[in-house]
Image (cartoon, rainbow, N blue to C red):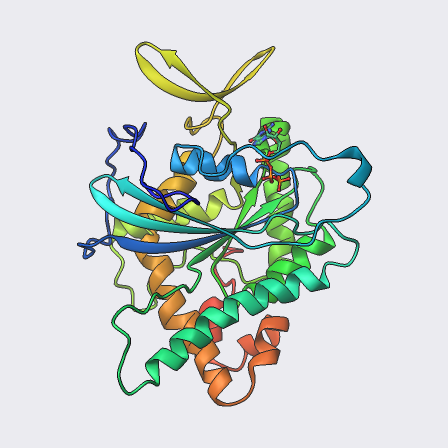
Length: 337
Ligand SMILES: Nc1nc2c(ncn2[C@@H]2O[C@H](COP(=O)(O)OP(=O)(O)OP(=O)(O)O)[C@@H](O)[C@H]2O)c(=O)[nH]1
């Protein structure tokens, strides 16, 4: 494994080493390892870094220093922090590159954060575009386009806030956005169901183009995939819970959060959607997310860039959705279904 320090560490046996599901490894052709670039965005305290450590099954991000009370009034600017972790998912090597964005949403004006993230995403597209235009290609070129952005929503139980709507509307045509409820164990099961419904109502009402597990446009998907995608659409937004400790249950390691009243099991589908989300990202949909980034999102950007029209689509996704086939593919047509 490589972590933020770039050093190799030993990889502990995964709690998922026993897992193999139908649809596993829909994307197999990666001998050297399949690169997957994942961005995490959400306000401070929603469990982004705990989620990352849980996803990678190790402390990729060390615990942060407690904030100095004397400095509490100063909003730290947003940063882009990079972590690279080699993962073994059911026999497939995945080179996971994570871009975390601590400091997002800390200020009163979030416009700067929105601009910085949009610029980051577009810079990666520009790099690919200029590489494509070189007469002699660089064999060591690293494709850093972001394949998925997990957007962490505050578990308020109410509905989406302005910052959520703005961010997702603005970037939905630049990256596959997967909405996630952070610290979802703060809600009761009933509150969670209602909150998910309200969020999806808002997503549909505001025309936010999130990644909605679409089936192939040419009906190439088999019955199992169609069913799985419908099930995943119904789960959106995913309810995330990050692991705090590992306990031993019948000789098996179980990742949990402990409370006076009992434990929340991170990988138990009845307690959280963490396991399904992990599987989507690292296994069943890794190919779809990568292909969609290349075939739809990048192609749209490339067309806009070459025709000198880049500003409009990212800031006004729904307006452009009526104009181009590529954008139509990004429209949340299946979200409401
Ligand atoms: N209830 C609950 N608490 C969580 C969960 N995940 C993390 N926490 C707690 O929430 C606090 C913040 O977690 P972090 O992972 O540091 O949150 P973050 O979003 O990375 O926040 P910053 O590091 O400030 O950017 C910590 O006290 C965690 O223990 C969760 O799933 N449920």
